[in-house]
Image 1 (cartoon, rainbow, N blue to C red):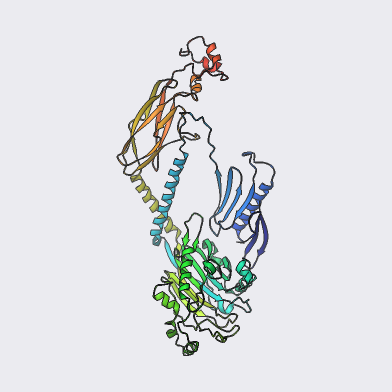
Image 2 (tube, helix red, strand yellow):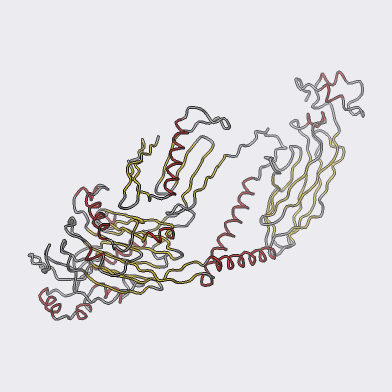
Length: 628
């Protein structure tokens, strides 16, 4: 049994917290946006729980609900019964679409395992329909993507990207010098932290007291000229990434997902690795990756491998979409403590060059620049010109370079890179006023061109593509020619096989798949005394196949034919995948016999059973005893 408990409403971030607890699952704490879609979702949860608690059984199905289940990671709310599943699917992070889907198990009719059993073709027909629908939708999406320039306009939005290794410290001052350093508010914030919590508990458990402290500090320091809502937050040990969007744009954010990859101890633990958030803004997909790569000056190859592991292992799973890798996005912004150092062993010489403002000379020895030039890591990424002094390593609470016994060589460990089109970097800077950590925070302000769909132009392009696809489908629709469509079987007798055949020829331009399918409300494609062989198959263009129709009255069907309740009459439906249906008429007459007729009926008959007066059979039939 799963429980759902409403906890609290957080006014600072306009979110609602919900706790989930199950008998065999750990406790989960969820945070949802406080909007009309969330309220509707909670109402459905409450309603479903009340129905689950009701002892009365469903009058229609006579099935009592068994449990209530909520799966946040897949955005599903499900109420499960024995034979029926009601599923509420939240299509994306904005929850614009709330759909009720009812799935029922197919109830097959039990039949005798005699010769006349005809195979069911539900599976084949479903495969035909689903494959056609899926391929058409996929082709439609592909062609819309190819014509995207015809229905989208590019509009620039401001993205503020920040990264800071806080060295396990708690916030001790306002973050406004970092987050509010521009006169105009950004449209999107993406802020990455490293070494958020260095405690042992953070390494082994998911909870961290530092997380909320830093989130609160961030939200107090966001630009005052705009209101922001949290899109997603994700943390792996000491790495945290939080994304905010201007409230004006919240309805244009969809398909939000987050993932994490650990590359630390045994290539699994989360002391090193990356966390990421992806979403679609208007019609442009974004992916933000915050990472903390391997430390130490000489371990640049390990840092390269960490980068490759994150790219290879991180994928986002969305409903109705295949897994998405990092590079499968229009814009990717990579931030964090990349830990690449300077190939310059003399700390004193480095400090002298910094004082002399010889930053370009130092950057020639920067490991990240070297790895990018030699195409060993971050090959497709770009980085702006660095005009600020190294952000590592300082004595805590000061602007002094490391004065410890290790005397670390200053380095640009904290970096922001990007890949994608229509990305212009406006600023790339460090923020020396913040002295909480041994690193200085870094930020970059981007102007990014976002594809905005113009509805009228989109509708026009969509309709043109649909018309073109319809025309192509008509040109390449499968087609058959049949030599016969009407069959008559005369004087059918008990257990005497009659067989007739006809030819089908593929006279179209493409291969066709055919199958005899059940008529509406039927479970089998034909009556028990009839059979088509073969009942399904595939024909290449100009290929011909012979289909046999066999009539055979067995003990399972003879009684109804003797009594006149059934006749040698049926209509077969020959269905083509992506094509039309062909109707085949079967008619004939059955010669009654003593086989399948009760002794009582035979005793009351005054004339032979084949005499014209057969109406008495129906009036006197008694199936209590059958002569076979």
